[in-house]
Length: 182
Ligand SMILES: CC(C)(COP(=O)(O)OP(=O)(O)OC[C@H]1O[C@@H](n2cnc3c(N)ncnc32)[C@H](O)[C@@H]1OP(=O)(O)O)[C@@H](O)C(=O)NCCC(=O)NCCS
Image (cartoon, rainbow, N blue to C red; front, top):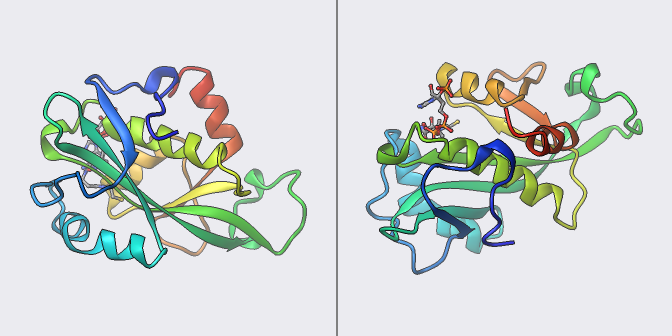
């Protein structure tokens, strides 16, 4: 599903291909306005992939071949008690719940504000939900209040005891995407 089209109301306004990060992608010129995220993408992400601690997907602008955004995913688990009760109704009472961490999400400055971030979120949800490993939810650590608001608008809910850690159950996220996005 490397070129999975983003469904529902989450299509970015320009044609992008979302695919795994590879040698053909230019990371050196990527800039999103957050120095730590830029630095991570330029110097760290390939090591994380090689060491199998993260997978990285990139959105390639088909007009220019430039990387317009990326996200990373890693396996993670949460204690059931950390997740708000409203989200765990009907879940088996296993003490540990499997989730996927979206460790980083960034859109290039030039491409921001055109729904690519929303589309990358939707892509990650579908990617995880249709994969072959069970995961209850996607989890993110918002880097600041503005980022937290961005995620909350997309249905993420704060986790108890972790400032700026948010969770989005996959089932409700998929339903929202199928219904036409938020
Ligand atoms: C946050 C980010 C991924 C959003 O991507 P995007 O393509 O600009 O977002 P979209 O166009 O899909 O959505 C735009 C919405 O996000 C909001 N937004 C834009 N930039 C934002 C930012 N830096 N932080 C938080 N929200 C932002 C806009 O206000 C807009 O709100 P609206 O839909 O009510 O108009 C992108 O701005 C970015 O990479 N920022 C820098 C890095 C960052 O903050 N990453 C998140 C790390 S936790």
